[in-house]
Image (tube, rainbow, N blue to C red; front, side, top):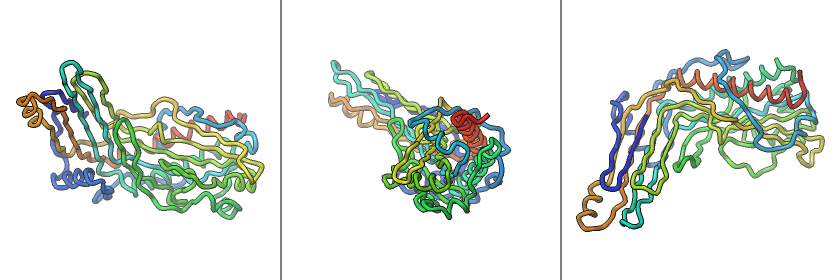
Length: 358
């Protein structure tokens, strides 16, 4: 776990692990993080091979889903037939959080702030595409096993309204705010369908959903999966005192804010009659190790603080630590497949209950 503390007079920075990658590679990652450039794929990446058809064989991670928003009518219009509209999968590759302390009013203390950031080396496009392909095939297999009639992909793409799904798109970078910091990642889709641009993952879509026409044409519910993975657990303080702390630990999990399963159905092509969104209920994380700290860069403003104290001027304590992380692709992929299987199973269970399937 990375922990950084900043105190009003002196910035204290926790010890870091010894480098596990070549320092030049790790420093290159840190430089890219600071300039905001997209991370390159890992050299010589060798993840676990993933089957792209049939159910996932990895044990399912315990996952629970709950209602985010919507109406039950989405499940009653065409309860036995479904369209799986692609399967967007994303993985964050940077994580940052900042702790802040406001200081004291009476003693003119300006407080402190501390920032810790991680950037992952190894979460690349081929890895996430394999995971998306497996998650997509697994969802279809689980739905079929549960008794749902899944419309074949070729039939979907030949249907009126299919163009509005915007399947076949390219992978894209995302940056979203999280826990008083920004997280950057990449989103892709299965090899068979590409990225779905309709109801995209970690982006806002203002165009027509097109689901009413497609649902009516195929007499089916339209399912749009979005699954985002975290690689770090973040914590940071916010207080009135003089000490600020921030920490980041390597921890695989499903991102609760961005991961959703959307179900839409309509008997009218003009507007959407039924729309329902599931989201994560609680946490879905693993304590299994997924990598190691490769190298770190640290800084603080203790010199400015000392100068300020000498002049009788309060200077806000600031500390910052950036670390490059080497991700074990095989372990990450295994956990991602386990998470995807659990996510799919939780959704199919909810769908069976909502459509009164035994």
